[in-house]
Image (cartoon, rainbow, N blue to C red; front, side, top):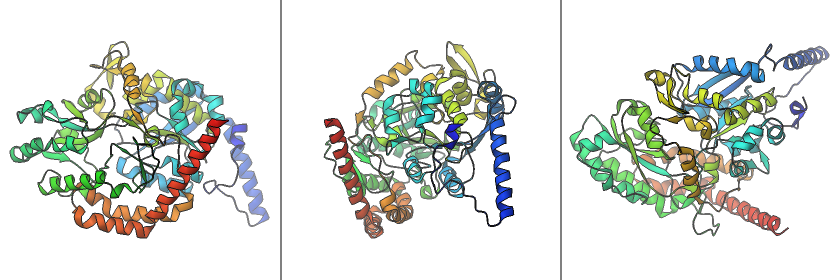
Length: 509
């Protein structure tokens, strides 16, 4: 039980016990001993430990059925069962912030660079350090998750989350509802690939035709959670000011909102908004999942992985094709794009790590969680190849979020060498010069809070075209400076310089 005694230093998220009377103290000590005794009994098939697991996604009708099936396997194997809580995409970050601040007990949660902020919460002490646990109970993770992922997840030299082994490069694509494209008499070859915003501009004739001929379809599925990914910029802290150029490696930190990439982006979206391609209330809606189900859309944004078109098409029930906006790149944000962390308040982090080990190394566990129950949600149509059944719609999980993709079944239509092609695709990605660097937010926490408030006021309107960038972008930049963006960028530069110096000194030894 040594694992349970580690990391008992003072921590803002560890529950503190205060006693004010002798009787209260005695009662507390008695309760503690009872709790400890209970904890020791848990973790066996006779007394399984309950793993409370928070995940992002859309709650599924059949999730309880699948978890019951999973628990039949887990209880005899690791003496544990899972209690899965799926929180909607738009609510997840806020919900997990409440859970973290309140000290509400849980075991495992999805964390990333883009929601339930991994680096920030690791630095604040919300997550359990995993180095020792990984060595004792995570050999399947060590064997299956590439070292570049584990290194990219370290914060101040310590690992606080297990990354998903998946596509490592980040590549933005424009998704096309192919039957709609065909109905317009157009072809995919009309679009200009790998040209960033020029790729989107090349699609305007398609959007215009849809707007004129199909009043029942949304031309461009853009919503308030739209994020622009610039091909040549590695943004240090999500959407906060501060980025470096990927290709010239000068390590100079700049404010991306002042760069031509972002001013052009806002200009294109404003033009499309005024032409009616983007919904008038886009800034007020984070997403509309029903669009994919109904097919009432023509164009949308997505992040790509090899054979994503096949996966999207299988899920939607009609053909979806995509056009890449730029060559894939590897950044810290991508390495930390899908992770599992153990709560600092977890009562049995050893058992939690055993479970994380299984979702990264056990094919049965990973495929059950990801695809559901054989004969109910899918059937096998070949070795390690499946076809979804109609009831799959009652258990449709975001595959990238649930552990090692490389041990999941292939879909019908996928080539036998799919995962080898993933590895080849990963090898083509351009590496950011900041790989391995994680910014410590604590010196500028007040500025970050103020800057976040400013972005919340302006960004959705700008990113959907609802706000005129000629008016509102200068106002946003003004308010960002007032909130402390210059201080944030200076601190980012200082830490990058220190990190480079330390890395150079280590390499020289």
